[in-house]
Image 1 (cartoon, rainbow, N blue to C red):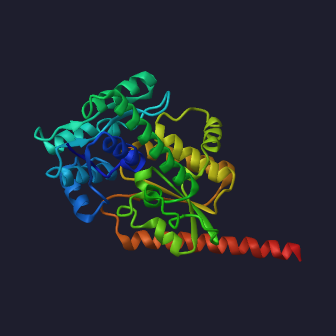
Image 2 (image 1 turned 90 degrees about the horizontal axis):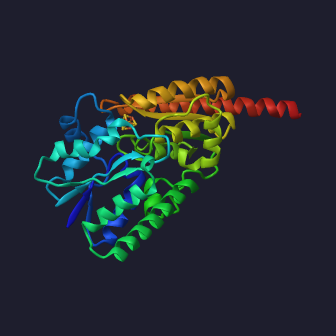
Image 3 (image 1 turned 30 degrees about the vertical axis):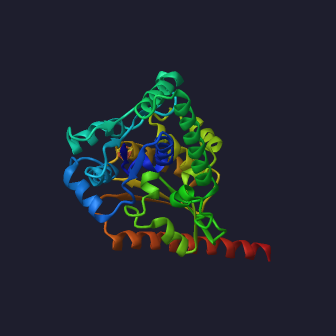
Length: 329
Ligand code: SF4
């Protein structure tokens, strides 16, 4: 069976896991690849106008696979952590995919929900495996291989590789190389690692002499400690990572500045943005630039803002260093 994995949204988190699991069970996996202008255009034309940019991009990836595969693989991730949920748009992804491709193409969509306990998820994965193999040992083996590959991918992100580098194990794609400035580029995986929608932001910053720190590179323990200081828990699984990373970067001064990547019109991010800005003002006051991306974002304006932000941080750093030298003399 040829199974298509759309290269948008949660692909940037679990693509490696899904691909590895399906291949280990003998499926021929077809990925839609990187986002392109035509993928974005077809997604925008098909998706609801009110959808956020990543959902529109996701639609485009689904449509790119429509005539290439026997089935689509779009899991429904309800919750990936106890007492949290994913955003409602992620919950509805399998239904959106079905609406995009019609009845002709089956959409395989196991439901993963950590609120329902581990056994629910094991059963969901096992039932998924049964679609491809009747051999229980093969399904378990595929699960173990996929989980190992997934952990390796996440570990590489933690060490500072970008998405492509982490997928392929290319150690020359390091985001942190001891450059002059260090900026936290924080946001959802798909808002940070999609080179088309971010206009190659991570590479551009590297060529401007800037080291990049992503949310993955901020240790999980540190993020959790910061979240515990908040008066209320954050309800959304992935927003916790984003907020935890921003708060750790600001309070502990891990970076010279922060670029918060948001897609328009993301409800959860707009709440977390206000929260992080308030906390930043109260405790760290690290310069923070919020970039809200949509399908109309032009490269010129985008680059101007990045360059101005980097210049501002560089001047600030030089000023502080000069003042410190004076004191030392
Ligand atoms: S979290 Fe925001 S950007 Fe992500 S799918 Fe939900 S609405 Fe869209």
